[in-house]
Length: 300
Length: 87
Image 1 (cartoon, each protein chain N blue to C red):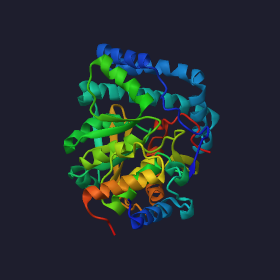
Image 2: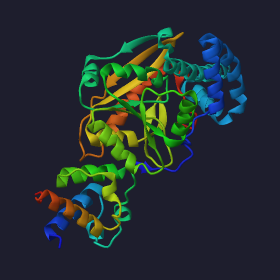
Image 3: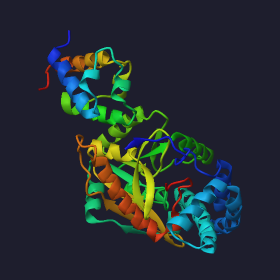
Image 4: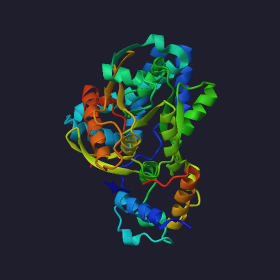
């Protein structure tokens, strides 16, 4: 475990301005989903040369991690940006009440159902992969509130869009600033109240501890923060990913972390949870690698 | 006046949890720097207090705690409120 200040970290802001996002909201509302996908197919070409940092990270993923050829990587790059755009369009459409235009498939083992239906809180760990937000409204069926832990810069952008669109989102946000101390109490209190707390387990920032783990066959760095919280607070840990597996079709993958539970004395415990997380993440990334959206130097 | 047994207990659990030489823990020493704590280590601190001293803490409890002496006083005052010294 080390405190890291490296280039392998996310800035706290995602690619894509609010204006671009709002343009797509307008197109979805006015012309429908298919028109938005068609426009996207052209717009993504712009990002290949004009988002060099992201392009370089996707290229590395395709060439070095997946072992694709140059031509294969160029196609992969296009598919990756297109997929990201589809993700944004779909989550906007679902949040705007168009969920009935999509079909969903749940891979939800019995032990996960039991935990999600239970009155106790649970920690849901996801990733910047697929489209977890498209599944957020379905958590309502368990009758519990979802609180999503999110970097403040990211939250401010979403908040602006929600206010502009006069929309209420399907989850509450715990907005993480540079000093996460008070946020730790917010997370603990939400869990104690029986809420789900959703955290992404795959993004480094300059203020977090991290751990090097073998992921997709190479060493990659993961933040330890989400796993320290999961290890110390003693609530069940569920891994959750939403993978787009067809046209307007999503598969939700849930799995229960086998090592969840409280073990405050052992510092290795967060690493065991991280290892289980990485195993579960690898499974879904192999299904749809083009839905991997970490646009920075992830592997070391 | 804080019971010396309580100070000993606090020093011992902090030294063990944060893997620091107990000799470095002095009343006037800065808590965060001596224990090399960052925000995430404070998760451990919260759990440690709840497990060893039997009360729940909130974020504002930590406002103004700079030295170990401040920390002893904080633990002591909360134990006094509870009316029992945990063994």
